[in-house]
Image 1 (cartoon, rainbow, N blue to C red):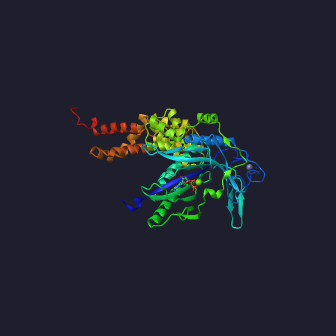
Image 2: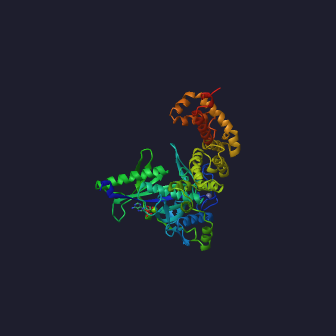
Image 3: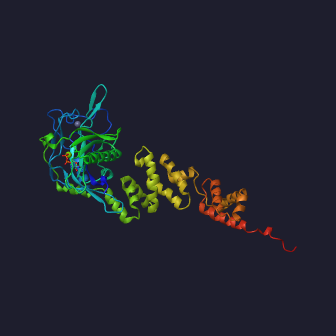
Length: 493
Ligand code: ADP
Ligand code: ZN
Ligand code: MG
């Protein structure tokens, strides 16, 4: 056994996601990103003495939606707790969170594994809390913006069941995809609405106890999560191999240096002096509410993957790409519903549609034409009215202009010429211009046939129907190969 195989990594992730509600969790201030500093604030979210929080019912509904989509148990009774700590962006001196009795317990997320059975990662809990404000450090002063304070946050905590950096990233992608399918979060990592802390430990293979862990904070992209975890696994493995001990610490990922740095020794739950929040009553979730939300639950990515695998002949890779974002899958399905063959709709969605949306700064639905128009375009290809290349050109133009397929094809002169007389004329021109090559062809260089086709297509600016060009050229070259009647020795006369 190689030495590096003697240890295994253990990873558990804590994800914080901001919920897409109109107002904050305990007050009526707007929950929006990007407002002028300290614009969306009130005495409640600024932590003034004597104010009282009022729980936002929408937050509860969105959390239950996530709980159901992750197969969690929804607690009929849960409580809020005060988590006490001092920080300039936390004027109350405590954060309202959940500690004992969170809203969702258990549950799991299934990761696709190509054609095999999905890999199931258990969740420990999903609980609610309020976000803190934001400190902004300038050379001469530190400023605090309380707009974010009181933003509803969901914390989704996995069991320590992930075994590699790649698996951790796959888990995050799936979780983000679920949250976006459910429309509970935009999952935007750059804006901080989807944030991850990674807990990493290493232990000898075969050990049943967990090793001491470090917690890595400040991971704001999938790439950083993967790099930071890899780095941390290597660092810890080296320490253990050298006979050292891992300290339970909180590390900060430094993307510039590509390494983690200890930030502080890890705090423990008892450091926070959690106690039940006296300003909020116990949270009671009537079973009818859960059932009502279950009945309206949107499809989740895993269900859509299973449906595609069952109903459509697509590869696991294709299914994965098509289902990662709900609107991409919706687009593909709308094209199929409009009569485009599955494979063609899948290919077009995975290449042209995703390219256009990735290259655009617009939202998906603004970046690409309505699926009915893309379907109309692909029908022109199926009916041999335009070539596949012409369709790609037309599609790119449609993304920018917003015009329909027929208008675009006409405006760009992309209609394919199938008319035999026109094609025949061009073939004659090409063959007479290339008389030497025609002679070589008849002398046995049959590969030149492709050259002739190419010349005709080029002369017709790519708009010739290649099938007709092939047929006409074959006929003409066969004819030219036979001696024409005038070349035959005249008999008699
Ligand atoms: P803490 O009290 O230190 O916050 P928790 O038990 O709340 O620890 O777990 C926090 C996260 O850390 C969870 O995602 C959990 O799966 C993960 N975790 C716990 N112990 C370990 C370990 N030894 N190695 C890796 N991850 C761990
Ligand atoms: Zn407020
Ligand atoms: Mg914890």
